[in-house]
Amino acid sequence: KAGVTQTPRYLIKTRGQQVTLSCSPISGHRSVSWYQQTPGQGLQFLFEYFSETQRNKGNFPGRFSGRQFSNSRSEMNVSTLELGDSALYLCASSLAGGISLNEQFFGPGTRLTVL
Amino acid sequence: AQSVTQPDIHITVSEGASLELRCNYSYGATPYLFWYVQSPGQGLQLLLKYFSGDTLVQGIKGFEAEFKRSQSSFNLRKPSVHWSDAAEYFCAVGGYGGSQGNLIFGKGTKLSVKP
Image 1 (cartoon, helix red, strand yellow):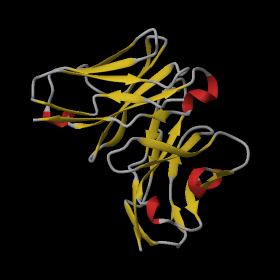
Image 2 (spheres, chains in turn green, red):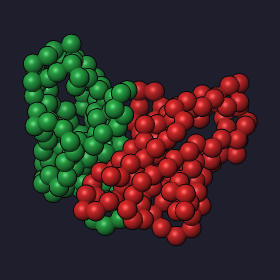
Image 3 (cartoon, chains in turn green, purple):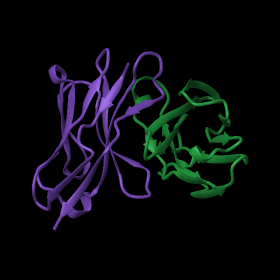
Image 4 (cartoon, helix red, strand yellow):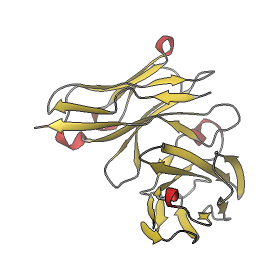
């Protein structure tokens, strides 16, 4: 079974631009979560989607948004990029429902650099 | 507030020596606990998890962890470290309240292995 895939793997943008990152979960997984990883703040939860609905959201500004499609693939968007948005963005998928929801499988991440 | 503390930022051990990485959590009920490993430039790989039952859990790559409720700890151990174990290790807790879609991570412990 293929793992979680994320595209692109690397991205360079300039301040003020917007960016869209994509995540394809493991086949059969219906929950997708996004995390931001930086050296200073570590791993921080962005949001979680299930059945095309955002169920949970972390403490990030509204410039960070996401969505999930009917095939469980997910995208996250960051508008008006700031230097501080430079980070590794990780996507994780898990099965739906109950305790299994918490066992998350991570993709390799998208490394975003904002200049 | 829920939190995870990994007291050691960086640990160096000799190849063949034993390893223990510490993790303490703050949580209002029985937590779901995880250890992940991250190699440079990669995503997170699940090493092991604790949901309930036996407090000593076995994981992949020869790792084990012990849940101690009285100490709010979930330390990771390995009897004999291999050079390929050099990586960063993250402890995480999940499943609190109605927010089941996200994990709270510690800041990580970077493991270096001396030949």
